[in-house]
Amino acid sequence: MQSRSIALEGEHDIAVARGEVRAVAASLGFRLIDQTRLATVASELARNVVKYASRGRMIAQPLAAAGGRAGLRLIFEDSGPGIPDIAAAMRDGFSTGRGLGKGLPGSKRLVDEFEIESEVGRGTRVTVVRWL
Image 1 (cartoon, rainbow, N blue to C red):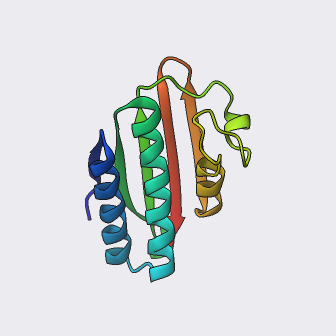
Image 2: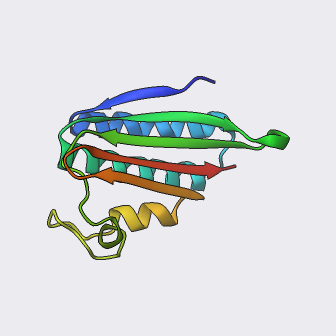
Image 3: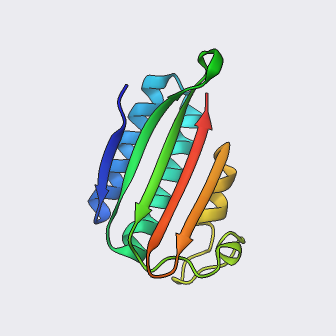
């Protein structure tokens, strides 16, 4: 299965990304609960791209680890304003956009691997992995 890249520029693209992640997860054999977790993560992180950077993209990459273990890597990247304080952004309840402050820390709890790279004025890249 090939990687898929989806442009994120508006509400419609968030729904497309969520649907694509659910479909890829199902095709890899993820249980319904994990498909839902991954779709939730995709929705949260895609929404952050659209809300804070206006545009970016999501890349969905099926993975095969040694021993045949399958997984799914999702990468969300943008050229937006960046995150000045990643540690603060990862705390429950912290928000710069009048939200509940659950998006990043909540997404981290739903995946096996979570990495965030951000540079103020250059953009942000969030990479998550969920193993089957």
